[in-house]
Image (cartoon, rainbow, N blue to C red; front, side, top):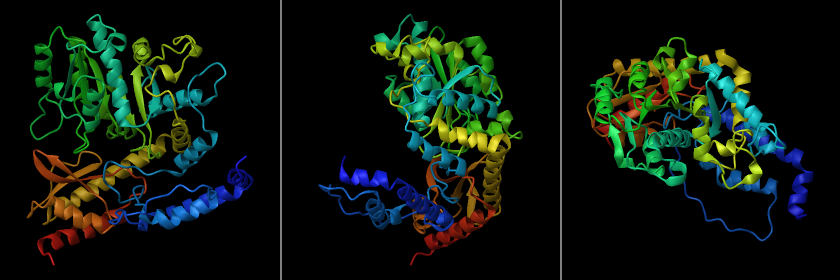
Amino acid sequence: MNIELQKDLAQLDQILENVKNTSLDFFSQLSDLPTYVKDQKADAELLGTNGLGVEKSLERFKEKYQKLMVASSGPRFWGFVTGGATPAAIAGDWLTAVFDQNTQSTSGTCDVSAIVEKQTIRLLCQLFNLPEDFNGGFVTGATMSNFTGLAVGRQWAGKKLGIDISKEGMSSGLVVMAATPHSSVIKSLAMLGFGSNHLVKIDALPGREAMDISDLEAKLNENKGKPVIVNCSAGTVNTVDFDDINAIIGLKKKYDFWLHIDAAFGGFAACSPAHIHLLKGWEQADSITIDCHKWMNVPYDSAVILVRKEHDRLQVETFQNSNAPYLGDTFENFSYLNRLPENSRRFRALPAWFSLTAYGRNGFQWIVENSIARAHELGDYIIGSELFELAAPVRLNVVSFRLKKSNEVAGFLEKLNQNGKVFITPTMLDGKSAVRAAFVNYRTTSADIAIAVKEMEAAYHSLLQPD
């Protein structure tokens, strides 16, 4: 055995202790660590002939790179809808690396991880008050979740035309509709061969990002006789606007389309009794995207795709390893390899399982409602501010706003973010630049809102009165 590897195995307990201490040091300082590091320069690495071993590698990492790490898992990183990692999720993720399972089958000689994954999907559906009508599995993020749901929808649409798309390829007779799709949906259409320019855009309601149901019905009428996939938003990234899912379900009974709901973080509204109405009817969807490394506060990368059990054959047709006879019968022997894009699958379910069992329904209700309360707290400040104004109502956990006396959003964000106390990202609303703060991190408190407000005001005044 390689001498450094042999030494590391012999000292594994001390190595893990040092990694634990490094982790605790990071978490103890998280609220005070910078959310932005301007200078990201690092000298080019050269691979040594002999390795350093873990201890010296950890020392080199801390000296060279750790100082450049930003507090993206901290309480004031409000860009990109980025969550943190709860203690339960960290425990599960650490053990995921230790057990190192390639999660595949629920039967035969494989490990128990696929059974744990199915149990975790069951717990998630219970958290969301969804019936046991869905199969589900973990993928890398919302992009692959949307990709998977739309891929099965593509197979369904092909069957309507008498085509097995998984074997024969794409057809030009398929139609995809959406009003305000996330960029990952557009990316998925490109990867699936629909073409990102071939989306049939549905009008949004005036001043909203939500779908105009009357325009949807008009477009459905125009495309009668064609198989249609409708992408529905359950929480847009700019304003957390929800399409009227219940009304869309009513049209589904009339027009028979595939309904994919992108509920990447908006699905967690189901955890709050005051907001679950936003998802009324979503149990009738054909496929649903849920992103766990957002509001569930598990580490990257983690998301779930839910597909109705009645579409199981379509899902297997889409993703089966048809030239791998050692996997056995794809319907008798449940394997995620035949139902999801990746063949090599990390045990992503474990951090989610730990989180669900550790915190339960009440814990996630608190996480969701805390984020919503903090968003409204910032929104209330902006409503009364002489410097800023809301660009859209605060509907859930995202605050979109503009500067009252300046259009220099980029300059404002540069000054705000480079100070390293809070991180917020730009966006576009109604064709105009805006600022967007997304709240999903369980650590965020009212004290963080106060810090952010002070930083926002300082950046605003600095913008209007440059040195």
